[in-house]
Every structure is written in C-alpha cells, then in structure tokens.
Amino acid sequence: MKKIINLRLKEFLLLFLMLVLFVNLINSWMKLKERINLIKETENKVIEEEKFQENLERELAQAESDVYIEKQAREKLNMGKDGEIVVLLPTPVLSPSPTAVPDDRSANWQKWMRLFW
Image 1 (cartoon, rainbow, N blue to C red):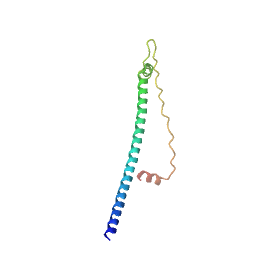
Image 2: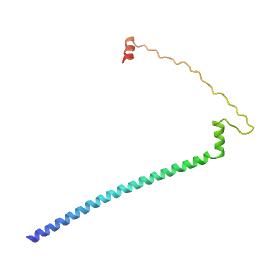
Image 3: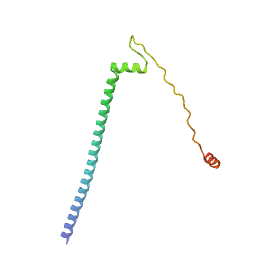
Image 4: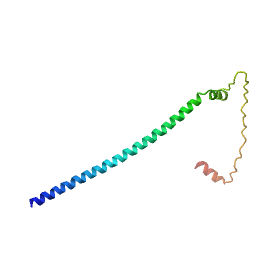
C-alpha cells in the first residue's frame, strides 16, 4: 500500500513539475514574441529617422548652394546683381465689394426669439 501511495505521489510531483515547466515555457515564448515585435518597431523607427535625416541633409545642401541663396535674395530681400535694376511693383489692393445681406422674411417674434435664445 505504501508503495502505491509513494508511486502516486511521485507521479503527481512529476506531473506538477512538467506543468510548471510548460507554463514557464509558454511565458518565455510570449515574452520573446513581445521583444521581437519591439525590436521590429524600433528598427522601423530608425529607418524612418534615417530617411528624415537624409531629407534634411539634402535640404541643407540645397540651402547652402549659390543658386538658392541668390533666389532668396531676389525674392525676399528684393536684391539684384550688379548692374541690374530692381523694380518693385505695388501690390494691388482689392477694394472690398459689398456682400448681399440675405432677406430675412421670418416673423418679428421669430427674430426676437433668435436674438434672446
């Protein structure tokens, strides 16, 4: 009888140990998946930031070029090359045209109601 109880106890402990190991294996696998996803997201962010940096470097190179500087001087500072005459035209001022006021054909009491509520 003691042998049978001892055997059952050993089987139970072995089964329990296997269950604990299986649960730990599943937890480790889930954590690994999360970390892999985090690494992929981080790699994507790094790629996006590298593209953004390349664009900024291209814009900087363009802004440092003589053509760009000359264009900005002409457009924003109204400057010209030696021997050129810079003509500044006045900006046209548009006179405001009167807008038609829609006729409100509602009753006076309705107008008063809109005014107070």
